Image (cartoon, rainbow, N blue to C red; front, side):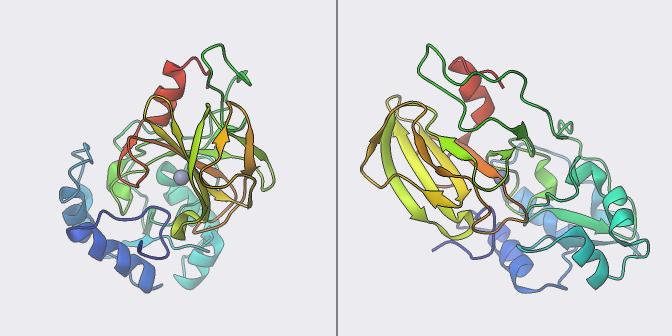
Length: 270
Ligand SMILES: [Zn+2]
């Protein structure tokens, strides 16, 4: 049973879980970055070594985004002078180019400008240029849309260490496609991921599609490349509609690999 209320579930051990649960439970529970540093250190998969924000001035605090939050709601509740625009401008480096798309687990700095993420931070919406619908290699994009939050985005600002997939920013109701032929190993509600489909492919890898508004496949069914598996949405813990897409080495959370590199390696342009 995953911890409720998270876009990404914590690993089942260590400090990271404590942090995540605390972030879910208390709206006003601002986690100090010292705690975040501990969580970060306890996450072996997070390869980033950037934890230098521990000594923030007393005036600034960290807020962990929960499901249902918007920048304006947070600005309101936290009495941010200057409102959501100020909050956004202070946190633009972590929020990215779209102020309406913030993820549960994202850490916002309130009261001062957030340090720019040290990891590859050009996570601003990048239009997927001329995406192919299908390829000779038998692989296709799950959906045509702008890439929002990139894989492994800036480890130190995510409760779970890093973003475990890639987000395609598409409105609710956009058809989603199986990236390759395979067998559906699960299709249904999965906690924070909302309506989710997981497909096993011939190479042993799994593709995961989360936050869907409706599913058109069921567990055990075989699918072909490009077959519609349902529609995108905003189910589970999200703050706006998008497709959260992962490639995994097992059906389960925590076995993610770079989904963009995987698709590109199979001849898909994005
Ligand atoms: Zn995501």
